[in-house]
Length: 247
Image (tube, rainbow, N blue to C red; front, side, top):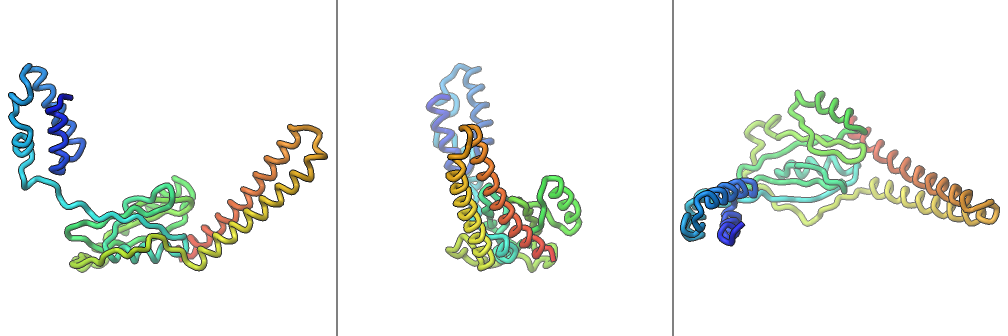
């Protein structure tokens, strides 16, 4: 791409033209200049003027929506989701760390409602989404064995769901309740105890092992056992929270 088209791409980005639209436009312009053989400056004029002609002032960047990244444990999740939804925050997805990626429209924001459901696999999530769809619910993400659904507040509140003056978000970005802290503490204790026990057993059995292969097999077995205990403890806490949310 010529320096002219590079400069034009930068001006279009400054005016709020999205990358896909800009790329298609620049490809057309590049093809046109290649066919005509004329220099871009001669063909289109000064970069600033050409960018202004392509994207008039009234089409420049629209207000960006507010973005909020936050998280909560399984016990706090449902209440916090609906608290954020009452402030106009719409969850777009749940990232791989279990954080809620939320946006709030800059113009005419409205409330949102949420629900947290137990849904271990993709098939479960699909069946659950189909069952909840008649009520206006749509999936907005999942993490571990939990699935999340949202619907506009207008489904139940009508025009009253629109927020005239949504509040500014607080500084807190992670919500950990007492039950969540206890569950995490139990998992950590189990992990430490199981890990210590495994190390002691491996050291004690190292002298009795007939060879490296047997010693390695013992080590793998105990590490797997420790991870299994930790996973079961964590899953039990999640399952208890999900069952509570369904009631």
